[in-house]
Length: 222
Image 1 (tube, rainbow, N blue to C red):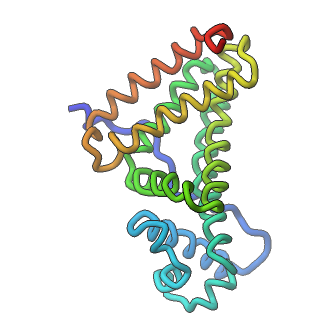
Image 2: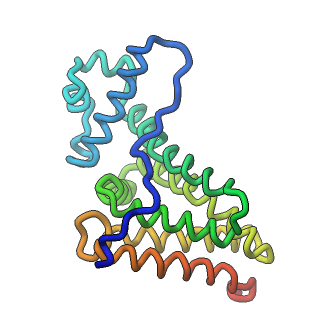
């Protein structure tokens, strides 16, 4: 069965940046809050992720929570930074692989993203943020910032593979690849109808994107 394939990549849920100074207990409290907030976002959605609920999930008073994060926006901003940083670390490892062609690295990074789509966190969190961004300017800005950071390695690989493209064409191609992969979330993500087909879709997508990047010309954008 296609769904029996063991994932090649695993992205941690969060990478929480080290904070300068402070006591160990303070750093632990900071991490506990972010993990509780992520769990609420995954299990109950953004609307349910109130400061009071996060505090309750951490077993602390609201006043203690606001010592770490004065507003929900502060909490969400740092939470999403911790989420995307975990991907950037994995991307960096692929970018700096020695003796691996840019075509192979592009295929690897596409495989990583598509495998991650099958996780509960990714299937639940990102579509919710997409929907919220239609009505919430703060979420809109955070989502577009997050995806700009996620597309950065694609820009580098495309430029290496096909240096004849202009920066604008390279950016459009990276956007197309990113959007094509993310669109599979609603069809083949966690508990979705075609989740078991995702290993096949990974192979199709990764190889297709590499061939497309190699073969596209500036004239194709005319």
